Length: 321
Image (cartoon, rainbow, N blue to C red; front, side, top):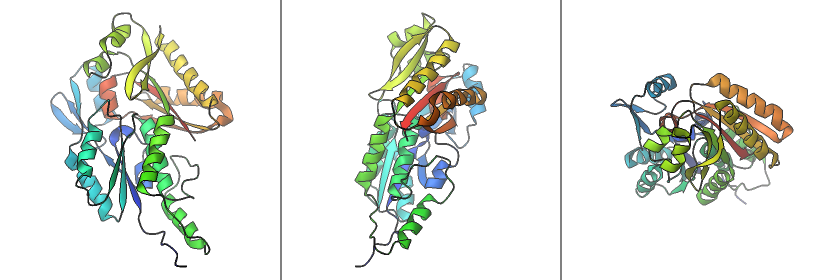
């Protein structure tokens, strides 16, 4: 029986810059990342290209007007064309919640003219909740070996390693997953994640329409430190805490409790200009969660998320390992 060639490209992954992938992860897994736009005091930047986190943090701290813009369909069309030119037969395009941005709609419009089939997924999440889903989908699309549990910092060459393993098998006809299967994998992982975050002020989220006025009033009028979460793709208040310190402690406690409910978990800690604080939170999580925690990543928040959340952003994402 003729064996299927495993070196033939199959499913390519595309996401957007709000996934906040750890440095180098997109390159290692061949993931296309379409950047969103950020406008600071009238000057337009491209997220992840020409807007350093320090510049954004300084602007937000100074009260400078910062807005964001979704990518045009043409940006996704270009990403799909690049993937097809590289040999992909299908594309899975996974993006931040459609409740928070029109990005997924732009991807859907571009998919209509793609040279190969595109399966667009509204993850209903954001940040590394999205990032974990994209990375898992990429591993899954590479085949059984690459789909095995691995960290986001895995050494280069996971796809090649999977294919080499298949070539060594003389009695097995490999079957790489189809586009719909990869899309479902990403959708399932995204749905299984939990995220909690806190900010210095809820006014940025209120002004951007990402949080209702009654919810924002908890922090603006009552002086509370709400811990926020995502539910059904939208930002909601999870708990109300009096002080910043208590809010951080509660943030960690919620994450540790969530890790304990899973056989094995991965965690990502997001921050904006607070690497030491984020690293300390991650260390606390590792010590508290013990052997149930398989992986911890500390990631700078994407510029788009930071623009809407404002200074002081800290977030913890928990996903299955």
